Amino acid sequence: MEIAKVDLRGVVPGKQGWEAARAAVTASMVAHGFVVVAHDDALGPDLRRAVFGRALPELFALPAEAKQRTAAADSSFLKAGYVGHLPGTAWESLLVDEPSDAAAVRRVADLLWPEGNTEFCETMVSLAKNMLNLQETVEALTLEGLGVPAESVRAHMGMLGHCARLSHYGAPPDAETCMSMRPHYDNTLVTVIVQHEVEGLEVHVGGGRWVAVPPEPGTFTIVAGEQLRVATNGRVPACFHRVRTPSNRERFTVLFTLAHKEGVEVRALEDLVDEEHPLLFNPLSIEEYSKWLYWEEGHKFEDPLKAYCGVNKDDGAVA
Ligand SMILES: O=C(O)CCC(=O)C(=O)O
Ligand SMILES: [Fe+2]
Image (cartoon, helix red, strand yellow):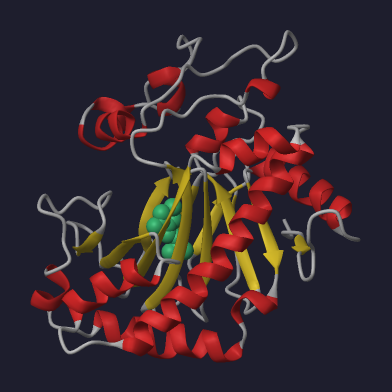
């Protein structure tokens, strides 16, 4: 299957191109739970070089104790800070909260480089601002495309927070399967995945078929997470995806997530619940759900979200 790309260059609300982009983005999100967009202005050659040629290699080359200074007390990969080499993985990652806020990035950078690293901070903030913009555009296009009125979209946006995840993958631990991250759903609303030169991201397109998304410069993959499935009352499925690198090379990626702020319940947008579309999911605390999913029995279910908060749980089959 060839993945269609939606060109978002110069697409702004109400201007020419917005309606066509809205139709294409919504169709892809509804059909697959992801959309690949072309938007080379969001990461031009200079910024790309600063991110992947400098900021990420420099960060992950730091001694382990420097990276550990940013780690959460319980080393959870769901909390801001560094997590390294979980069992069975060659993956290490740094999660930064509100990366478009210079002071927030600076706090993390000062732990990593006590002598300061202005260039790292500037690079991250520039990229984060562009990615936040891109995510808000895709989120607004999708919701509008589903018929949600502009004021509901605005109210929804007001409940969201933004995070960046910078990742480094060593060569896949199993050279035969080449799997670097097992299939999963993100627990976010949307995640934009920025790849660079080395392949890895694969999305499930149904019927056990996986499609690799090539790491083409100027393109970004936006995957829907479980929060968007709840918010859209099931219209947008969460994207099942994984990381597999057949070339067995090391790899850097940057992800940006948009998700409900901590403590804010995730619930279906009222405009998307009616007689024809009865409520599918009860309101959800993402913190409670994530605990259940990762550390309790959640992982046993084929459709954990449905098993946890589905209005009809009967078919949340155990895997
Ligand atoms: O590195 C990638 O391409 C995707 C990683 C991913 O899906 C995740 O961290 O949730
Ligand atoms: Fe993911």
